[in-house]
Image 1 (cartoon, rainbow, N blue to C red):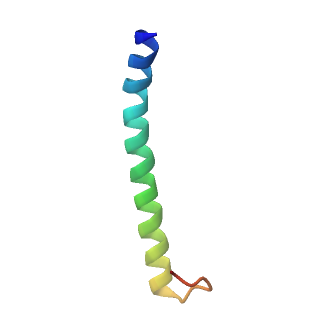
Image 2 (image 1 turned 45 degrees about the horizontal axis):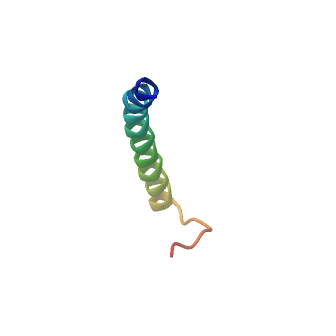
Length: 44
């Protein structure tokens, strides 16, 4: 119903922001670690 979609929108939006922020932090942290020592993985 409209109420459930409203609740999903209000809860989902901050959740997406938190997920994207944590992804950015993890990516930056991994990049920082790769700068310190060469990683075994190859980037595409």
